[in-house]
Image (cartoon, rainbow, N blue to C red; front, side, top):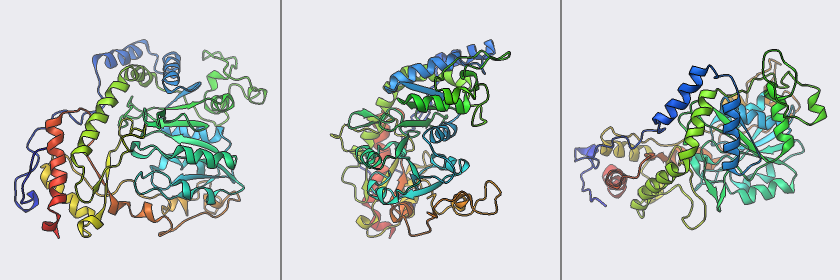
Length: 437
């Protein structure tokens, strides 16, 4: 590894990074094959058809190893549909980590349910299984583990708790498509899984989402909820396909139970088919690059890799929104922001790190005060739910993440000479932290 000497760049010394990163961060990788697939949809005027989407659903379900797959306009709608199909309704509760993007759980409020937030584990940043079971009550319908920033949740423990209490599990795989937990693909443990495929994700196809399940009832309920063309109702306007066998759902043919249109834009599904062909090899390169970065930082004081153990059979998928773990106690209490500012000086504008990650949801006013249905009371309480609202101090690990996490470069290509210099910048500041105190 390149040896970088002090003084720190923030004090006028030379920067650790001198190489030009080039396209090492550019994503998604879009080729003429992607462009041609999208152009064909546009020229055929088939943006609102479903034939290509159905091809994608079949291919994606097979790739995931799940029986059913449905394409959605975005991951938020896929997660909401899954919640409804898994039985979440007015007065119910779901359990979700507070450390996640709002789309992992806020949809529950639109179903009249509430969210009981759980803390995360300090090393994985995923939901802490030990903080789940005591939250389960008589109206708890669902646990939503989020494979946060690509790190697999502890699915063995989560599934054991869920089965013990007859609670369903919906995996949010928006950060972790293609990741593994003990050799098994993320999104294949829960009763269903849903995820975003928007352009910033590691599986990026525009603005889209997808749901997968092995449960025929979940699949049919999702069809009834938002895919009116697939209910089998006769139509003068749309080609129809009968995907429902449940007689209780068949009587609602032609009008979606949720009042939603969940059809995926076929420019996205066409691109998705192309991206899927190359996704495994592309994320394998990302994994090589990101593991190289962390291997170079092994032993650096205050810095801990956010990744599973190498011999665990678990992986980070496409390593979306890569972060590191900061341990200020190893640097005599140096604040994470001070560390990040000094690293940014070493990187000379080619990348900017900052402390923290997603802001905790459990203290947000939406989950305390918002009256979505204009009933004169907070929606989290409006349908007879338990009051599970939590204030500051209730989830200490989550609330401390601005002090214990920071962003790291998300390399899309394994270019050792560039990655070595980036790692040198992070190490240089950690090893000369005394100059910052």
